Length: 209
Image (cartoon, rainbow, N blue to C red):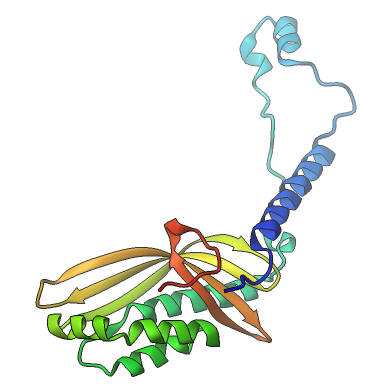
């Protein structure tokens, strides 16, 4: 499956731009009129090593710093994409043994691209999975919480989402937890889930099989 955009390149470029901008800002704000003595020179002049290190090397500006101005997406776009990633992950982990598997697949497909929806439908409705869930009378209730933003470019974002499932089953009730790398891509004015992977396996444009 082709990955939307060069996410790794854009993400690195954003980080470089932000670091460069912060460096320029601090340099401009903190440039003194006279040369500043080195730590050793200051210590010798005062006779006290503590005096040389009393001035902090970096200070925060009183003005606001808007990190979103350095990103290719607006705050509202990121919020919408993150919300979709969370809702999709929760829906992905919510199903029950006595539900029509096709209904479960359609519920998940509502969040995805057509291509990913086709792959997930094949997985979620596979005979082996369905029979195993029925045999164990498994009922799963999913929840999700955004953990971090891994990559971002103009039309897609990779989120790390912590998914949890409360499971009721004949084999025993339990809680399951998994972190997913969820790629959300922009289609027109809307967002769709393009890919889902276990977070530890990276994000290379492939979907769970």
